[in-house]
Image 1 (cartoon, helix red, strand yellow):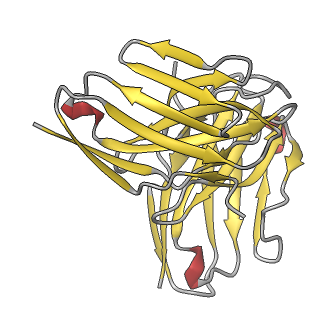
Image 2 (cartoon, chains in turn blue, orange; image 1 turned 30 degrees about the vertical axis):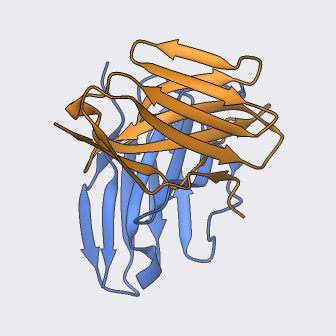
Length: 116
Length: 112
């Protein structure tokens, strides 16, 4: 079974530029998550999709971050414009259970973003 | 507001001995707890989990203990092996929600 795929693996941009990350979840997984992991901290949920609908985006900075999951499969996370504090690893995860407590989430390798 | 806390940023253990990683939580609505392991340049991988209806779950060398009254859980690894060197994250979810709240992580180093 193929895992969660993410690209690019690394990205370096200057502040005020825009950037986009792509994620392809495990086949058949209805739920997709985007996390931000700042160095020395645990992953923080940015947005959760159930199929192509948003379940939770309460911690997504909506003035600069956006995400979509067209057709309920792969997803794109965009930052526009980027700030220095956006430097982090962006992790995508997926899970197969719908609205069940505590399902295991499978993570991709992440995209390391550096904003200069 | 840090709802899940791992107060030890790092832990060093000798190969063959027991590693004990600790995690505290504040939200009484949490009813499911997970441990993830993360190697450099890789995403976290699921290790073991426990539901709040249990106080212990064991899987091979890994055992998770849950003390609900103290809002504390721990991960025991015995015997520790060099391949166990990684960052370990504790995570929790509340009933009816799939959202995971993570701790800050503990870097475990197993010394030969």
